[in-house]
Structure formats: C-alpha cells, structure tokens
Image 1 (tube, helix red, strand yellow):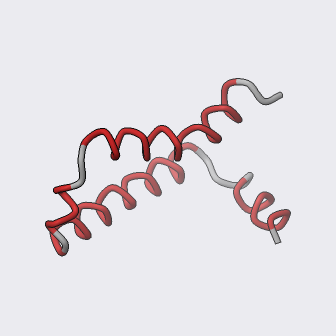
Image 2 (cartoon, rainbow, N blue to C red):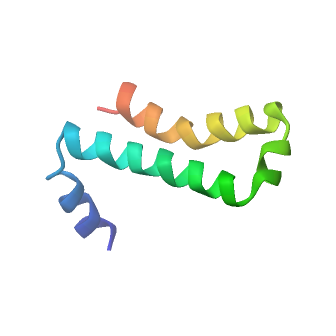
Length: 65
C-alpha cells in the first residue's frame, strides 16, 4: 500500500505540495472556528506536538540519503 502511495507522491511538484499545505492551514482555521475551546490548549503542549510531528519529515529531508 505504501509503495503505491510513494509512487504517486513522487509525481507531485512544489506547487502541489504548497497547495496541500495551504489547504490544511485553511481546514485548521475552520476547525478552530467550529471548536474555539481548542485555543485553550497550552502553548507548550502545542510546541511539543509540532516538534513531534515535524521530526520525521525534517530528518528525512535533511539527513536521509
């Protein structure tokens, strides 16, 4: 399954990836507008979540050959 997904991802260019990121940003804004209590999460918890989610892609981008 992941092999097929990897083959499809290789067809994406910078514009496709940028548009995907922007759509996720807008979807996140919509979710926060629908559930404003999500804004009450502590900043430290959010920073830890961001670091955990970004660790593998950043490792693959900078260090994986």
